[in-house]
Length: 358
Ligand code: MRU
Image 1 (cartoon, rainbow, N blue to C red):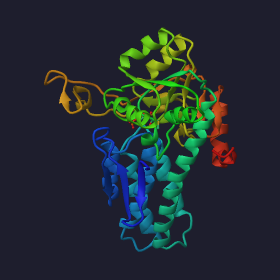
Image 2 (image 1 turned 135 degrees about the horizontal axis):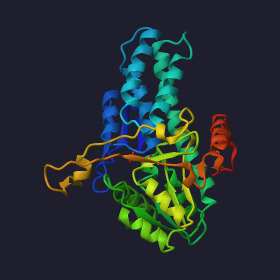
Image 3 (image 1 turned 45 degrees about the horizontal axis):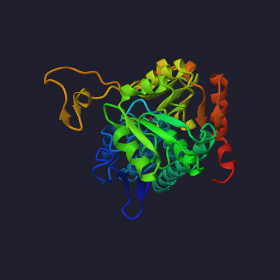
Image 4 (image 1 turned 90 degrees about the vertical axis):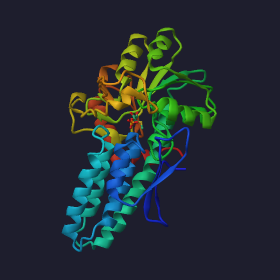
């Protein structure tokens, strides 16, 4: 089942409510793009590629909700909807990438009727969702060449099927290696404060029968220093033109400790997550979420009442700690400024579709 999809009978957007997993499996349904934006903000759906596809479906909903009778009035309504959707979460560039793609489609042909626009936005959203699954499979295959039988992989946050439309990014590499019959083990960072590792990654690995242990985030350094980790795989919410990688808070610390211990560190990043307009990672907006997420764990207080907390949701890993970046166009190595741009261009030309059947 896909994380997010369009229900063609009911003309609604449906998504797995990830806030409830692994304890309850609930599919939420939306017929208003503003509610879709709220679902992104409140993390019913999360993970950069998943929220990109969700925003694309949200734009298709907005076109259906609009009462505009003319091409130009429809453009105004879609631009407003786009602003609401893309500001729901600031760090993952996939949101504004998907909105921009939909606005391009909507404005391409001034001769289009409003109904044509409604139809083409749904077709485009479906294409974004289908491509996400296919290119994740390709990235998984590309990244799996770095995994040998017997490897232990350290993983942060959730980057699996739930973080995408299906299959996953960094966890997609794990799934591909497992599918190839490599005997692997995963150390799963619990990933405080939202516990995406404990709740979601552990759930996905258990369902696939892949060997893993859940670890407290604070234990990762110990496992790396004592030679119990062969490779670190993470995702990204936005990667700058120079290869600086924004990802779930705690990723930077992992990268530094990996370098200190000679362990390769590979972010797995679809090119839709690469923002060539930003020269470096200092320009990436970092979402700061509610203090309540730090002051509570699974809705129960864990600290004295009345205190304050800080809660940046992401951090930036400078590219000097990055061994290589796995994309659908292959693994990109330094110099990232030149080679990432090349990978993005190759992907825009659809080169990743030509690889061996998977
Ligand atoms: O706050 P989240 O759960 O949306 O953060 C998700 C991550 O940080 C993932 O690593 C990232 O989106 C890339 S993997 C699909």
